[in-house]
Image 1 (tube, rainbow, N blue to C red):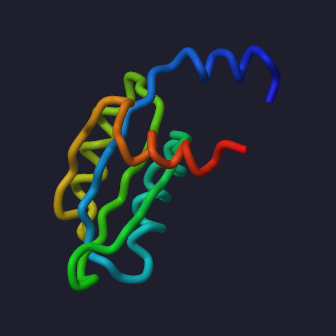
Image 2: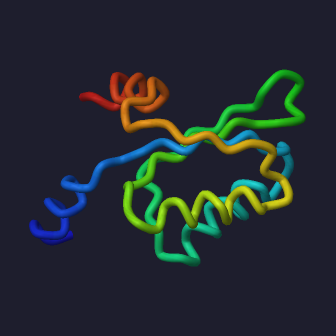
Length: 103
């Protein structure tokens, strides 16, 4: 990645999209594939099963841009997505993960 591209990426604000999904093989592929097909980069992903494991929660850290609203609408249409919530860039899931990635 060249310096101008990296600085442009850092200039974009990030946001966190939180999804509740049915937990079975292929769900993550469908969600991330939707972003990939539209050349929308996902900066971070955290997934954890909920309760008895029938559902999972996915947190996606993405860059905030003009396409994000449309991306959220498309995600909401996926069969296995039960709920979608949008948060600011300071979501505790990714803030706490930074503690583990610091050398």
